[in-house]
Length: 194
Image (cartoon, rainbow, N blue to C red; front, side, top):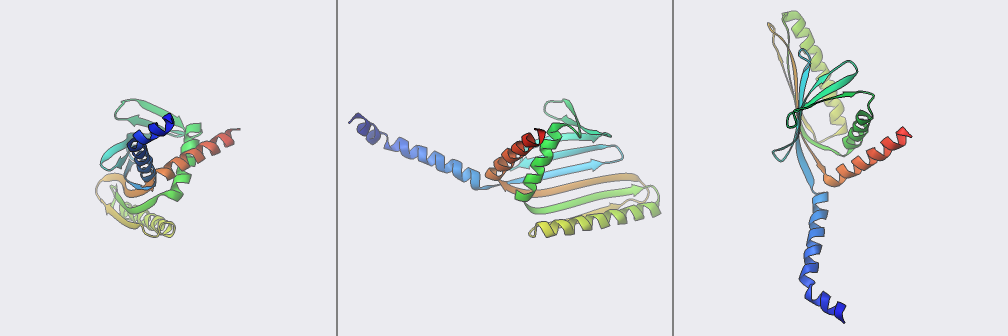
């Protein structure tokens, strides 16, 4: 008798909990839109990665490549982390990117480059080679992701020594796919270590 009265009084509370569960399920299914910015300057050996979710910076760090690793500098915490390419964390991120690559939907990709060696002939030859590589990459990507629009802009500077690459991307993935890929990568990484 007491339980029946309790449920009759708390019907609004029950519907509120159902709304919360429904909201969480919708949040798992609705795709999240990310903007990814990547730039790299091989002459100065410095690069930067920014990942934004609806105008909010989620990931923001600069990096440098070494012979057998990578040095990451975070802007918020102002600390420097160094990882070897054989580090288990790098192996985990490699598995995670392999899993996420299948789930991500790419909307558009913009690739920019500034290339100059100081000599007009060598600058033109290097710029032509980089453009060929860009077009091979874009045709490969177009075969994987049909609806992606790709634009390649390359600028050749004949009198300056500059090599800069920039990559802008608009991608979407739902939270459920992110969680699924994360746990799958964790499982595969632990299985690989044993």
